[in-house]
Amino acid sequence: MTLVTTDDLAVMLKRDLTDAEEDGAALVIALMTAELEEICNRPLEPRVITGELVTVGFSGQAFLKVSPVISVSGVTYSDPPGAPYTGSYALTAGVLTFSPTTIPFDVLVDYSGGLSPPQNAGLRSLLLGRLTRIMAKVHDDALGVGSLTQEGYNAAYLAEGWTEQELAIAQRRRRRVVRTGN
Image: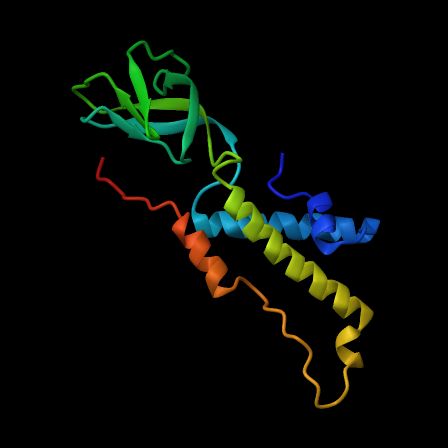
């Protein structure tokens, strides 16, 4: 499942896309989604992560890379590989808390994490607006609309890139990471 599809973009553009435009739109969708994920510092859709190596510190806490965590499907020791973890753990706000430990140890965690559809609705509309501007500009450039204006007449300027308002919205969804010593 993708956050935005070419069909969504065609609806926003109020026209059907040709096969070539659909291929180009799919590429632009992938690029803009990756760019927005980079800005937000988190995946915009749920992902399954297998075998993430996590160090459990003296506090018994292990911080996972993808947040928010939806569910944990398995925990195994990393040494020896594949040995199931027999202790207890709890998942609270994206942090795995293991039963009290006296020494740090490493585990491999299988889990799913990322923003779910109710959480990413605002980012989806943000992405659709940006993609609509890009595809409209590509369409106008292909038709040569910009070269048909009268001299001295300025056509409406379409913002390229993310606008300041869009970046501010994305920055509010940014995942902040605090690096710890363990």
